[in-house]
Image (cartoon, rainbow, N blue to C red; front, side):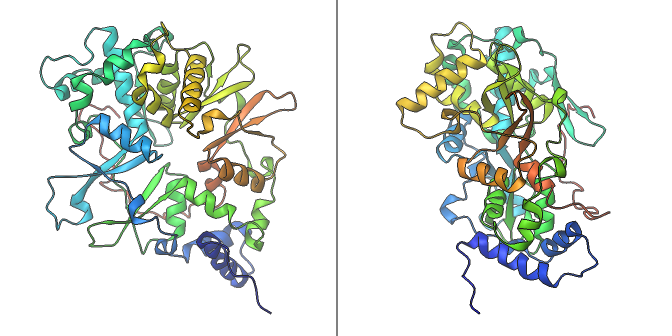
Length: 425
């Protein structure tokens, strides 16, 4: 009997997992079977990003150019290519890190903090020296789980509050136009260039994107000198959406969120901002708590009226004129101004939509389909009254698909993540 051919390259991966699932050892638990299936599929099999979509940022690009490139291509991050590396350099010498909107948000916070002291974009010394002199307001610490977080000495709403003209002044300054990504890559600790090799497995890839909090993973050939593919959390969730209906997926995807232990975070630990707090407070919290977005809560603090994600820092830098009328910019002001700007530009964005929500009794399959169809990275969990009580991210979903076997990575991470000289851990 003939079976329908897979409808997409992602669905083809699903059928490959299905074949492995059917012959897996019967004594294995469903979780162990999934681990076993993904361990048998090499990363080289993941659908390729079109070569024209593998975006690289040259190390001599300015922050202004970098923000424009990331925004135009609608991506959260991109590898930094060392322009001083020889043409025949291998990928190890060719790439020096990953530039992310999270790092750009950190840079912006430094500038707003310096603005209060009258030093933002100062011409005294080089931009890099001026920037480094202000890094003292951030401290790096390692949490009990081993993750590195940053704290800032300017945690009050007052410290996060700047006038609407600040962003236009900043983005028109020579400091912003001339500061190079490569110059500040160490100071801002862009994400390390942690690459997968084509021979690595899906299990390795899924664990790095979930438990180890990588947003995207370049794929390279050993000894090669270029990026073969870039795998993101979004592309993995899209793959899962294409696997709906397959036996292995349905055995997992029909479980309720509460059965899978989702949301992971207790309601009282949800990172959020109120609508009247400064918008920079949202980006401060994202950086300090290591999250990719926060809900904007109503005046009662119970219902989400919007969402601000780390990628939305682009609107503070790419369209600063839309805030000129504001004496200070609250989270609600930010959402209103950006939505108006997007409508004028006829530009699609999740910011134009109402907050996407779900309930604890929803099944994980429904959540995957919602996230994939709306192209968002998080969905908020509400109770029967519509009050926000949790969040589920792409990373949370992937983390429930596989688990890390004991001693799985060994010395995989040795020498990959180096902290700045002025960090304290």
